[in-house]
Length: 254
Image 1: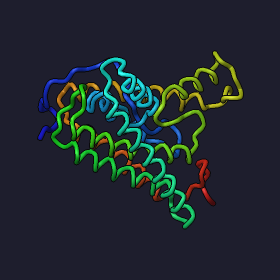
Image 2: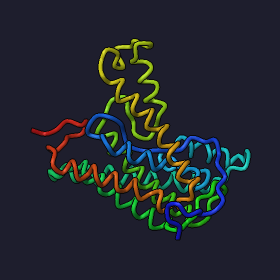
Image 3: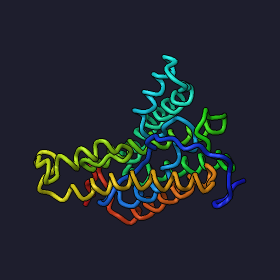
């Protein structure tokens, strides 16, 4: 078992973009993004060439693997993609079920996600990070984490914070630039304060990648890397237990 500060084994770092979660400065996604991204930046480096949140990368990896173009295995992205799809379906059903019965769908979604992240941490406890072809336990962790990220993306869509998706920096960056003093496009928020949370989102993605990579280099095992993410999600869920119930779109009920 590796604890923070203990060298878990040799790590090879690659120049790839890590997949990361929740969002920036404004409610209802405040807090979860900064804490969770700061931890999940190293997961691509820790679990092999596979994404758990940004499925665009997995679709491409799967295509490359099927075509035998380069040393990219098809199994890991296929497992992650299937688990993500299952998580999205389960998340949609769960949160709609909770809302139909007058329960807090946002808190329900976060709680389920946190349980899955903790399960992934347990599955990866003592597993040393490695970037090469994933073994059985790395695949298991990737699958459980992808399941959680499928649920997270459903939650993000239901919250619908404009221009700030929680697992993809491309759209946030485009919204930030287009709605800035440079782009001046009022259709995507020029003249509003939206650029602040979009800038936070892009910055959080970079900070998460940097922090995660540094934690991998210091020898954190896969399980330790996931624990702060679960704690951040649980903390946000607890905060929103005291807030008015939300309708999809992030609108609080009166």
